[in-house]
Each structure stands twice: as structure tokens, then as C-alpha cells.
Length: 495
Ligand code: AMP
Ligand code: MG
Image 1 (cartoon, rainbow, N blue to C red):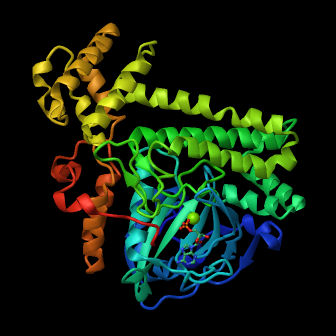
Image 2 (cartoon, rainbow, N blue to C red):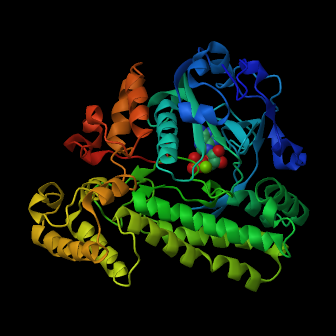
């Protein structure tokens, strides 16, 4: 194991601080993780390990496996679980908190502190009816998707590694336990603020806001109204994060306010999904029967969640008008970012008045034909301005080929208007439109093998997803449409 400076360190020597532990004790409970029997290494992320100066291969060492399962506590670790509350599916849920997550501390990096957290490390005072555990299935989904999203350039928490244990965990069926080591500069959520506001604890509310500003938004510390600046920046970041989701077809599935990061990171991967046959009303979470968190609804829900944060911060901000002014940034920021991403996805360098209509009609075409979202944009990059006769692979994604042809005529006109060059546009579009995303069936295949003790499919899938924009001829099958058996795959909140 080597650090940034090249010196080998052991798990015990992890250079951990815990800035969150410097907050008053009402913010958390100090506790030890609960050990799991016979822990074993499953996978680690090289890019995530590099962020904290570690080498992923060394994480296979039994000391690291013990520390990152919660069976052993590193010397400098001050483990704790944080309290928060939140709105779940639009309804106030009261106190929640880290019911199965335990923060080990944070490591200083050139880009600021990185907090390490074990998810599934045992009961905490916030476990409510839960068992404090996470199953292998959901842990692999979180591990793979965190790293896939990072490779796609989407703001997200990271996943360092995943370990397993033969310990049984009961969900709909009996499964086995796993622990994901998650990393983020902070896991503070909108619900962390709602918690204190709902209890009328203004001092704690201010303490938390000051901690977040001081540690993560120091540029606002000297502002006339730092809390309004905080809300404004979180609103903008949330809007940009959701624009990224829409542009790549990512659906979070559980956008409760306790799953919304104060840093604008994608947080808490549960019943997420990537859009396949396009349907703006698609609901990826089987538990979400009303479709509150459908693909299209992610946009207004992101705004709604910022309202909940604004409401929590209101006593610090001052007047409702000042909070409104910050919230009003959501729509323009979302629109601006999505517009930028769509221009890149279509290989358009210039912005023109008619582009909005071209984008809208493209989404209508995708909707009417339920075309595969990822394949459509990837194949669009192969289009040649003057050779519609070569459109077949793209055109074949549509049932109504004439409707596609009509849209393609307009797209070609638009490309000609800015003198677009095929080869240059193709490479720019391939850098904006991934070939490989974490389709549910790909995760399912890797999970089923892992449940039988074979982790090679997890390793291979991770390697594919770490280079989502690259052509990987040897991994062509990972870019394929879902097989028939996957049509009825369901993912729920069960994790
Ligand atoms: P989630 O929907 O996964 O974000 O979880 C919502 C809340 O339930 C959070 O406070 C979690 O910590 C808690 N929770 C979920 N699953 C468990 C579990 N198995 N044991 C304890 N708490 C859990
Ligand atoms: Mg959560």
C-alpha cells in the first residue's frame, strides 16, 4: 500500500481525522461497527482508491478487509453515525439517521477532505425497524453505480470497496451481508437541516450550517447573507446534477430529502435505473407506485426538495423573499445545464433559436417509438451529414422510420448550418454519449454470479463502466439491448 507520498501504510495507519465529530454530540452517536463473520474481499475501485492515495490491489489485504467491514477499527478512527430527518415520498417522516452507516473519519486529499463511511456495518441508534445490514445484491448495485456515475462525469458519492460475509440477512428471501465503503467530502443531507428546524433548535441549525459553509463553501463565509448564498449554491448544484441525470437517462428512484446531498452529489443508490426504451414517465422503483420519482418528475422534485431545504434554513436566511430568490435559480440553472448537455449530445457547437424545438421533437420521437436511450445517442454520433443511406443502425431503433427520417432531415440541416465536420463531431459526440451504462440486466448477471461466489463478472463490469465513452470491441455485448428475460426485472426499496 502506498500513499500520495509513496510510503507504504497499513490499514491501522490510515490518516483519519473526523471533522464531523467536532460538532456537538447531539449531531451523532459515537459507536463501533458490529463485526461480521468471515469477511471476504469482493472488489475495489482503482480510481476511488487513488483519490485517497491508496492502491486498490492492496485493499485485498486482510487488514483492510477487516477495517472496511467494520471488524477492526483503525487507530485514528472515531466512528459515528449521524442523525437526520427528512421527507419521504413527499411526507414528513420525522427522525431517520444513519440506520446502517458508520462514518470512520475523513482523509485529507489535495482536493479537500474525503469522508469514509461503512454502509451495512450494524445497528445504530437510528436503525428503527431495520437490522443495520445491507445485502450483497444492493451493495454491488451501489458500488458499481457510484463508480459508473463518476466515470460518466456526474457528481456523485464514491465507492471504495465492497466486502462480503456469509452472515444471513433476511429480505424477501434470505440473502447474505455485504459492506460498501462509501466516500464523499460530506454525507450531510437536506434532511440533516430539516431535523433541527423541525425541532425548533435554531442553535444547532446554525452550527450545522456554519460547519458546512466553513468546511465546504468557505467562499460564502464573509458574504452579507452566507445562508442565502448556501441555499443558492445548493439549489444550482442540485439543478445541474439533475440535468446530468436527465441527459444520461439516470433515474435515482428515491429522491427523498434525506437522500439529497448538501454538496449536490448523487447520494444513496437503491432502486435506481438507466433509461432503456425511452418513456418519460418511466418509474424505476417498483415501490414508487404513484411515480413521484419517475424520469420526468425528477426535475420538479429536485426543486421541491430545495424548497424543503429552504424551509429548514429560513430562520437563518431571514425573509421568505430572500429564500425565494435563491430557489428561483433552480429552473434557469437546470435549463441552462440541460441545454448545454443536449448540444454536446447532438454534437452542436453553436446555440440557435430553433434548437429547443429540435430537442423537443427528438424526445417526442424517442417517446413515441420507445427507442433505446443510450443506443440512440451513441449511434447518432455515427451519422454522416451527406449520407442518409448509412442511417440503418440508428433508423432501426424506431418503429416509425419515416418519422425518424423527417427529424433527421432537420438535424442534418442544422448540422450543415454550422458546417459540422463528420469525423470531428463523431469524436466529440462519443465523448458526450456513453456506450456503456449500468443497465439493470448487466448488474443482475454480475450479482447472480457473485451470489454463487464468482466475483469475476463484477470485476469485468466495473472495468467496462470505468471507460463508458470508449469503444471496447472485446466488451461489445455490454452495450447490447436488454435480453427478453430482463423485461420483467424489478428493483424496489428492499436493500
Ligand atoms: P434509504 O431509503 O435506503 O435511503 O433509507 C431510509 C432510512 O432507513 C435511512 O435512515 C436508513 O439508514 C434506514 N435504513 C434502511 N435500511 C436499513 C436497515 N437495513 N437497517 C437500518 N436502517 C435502515
Ligand atoms: Mg438514504
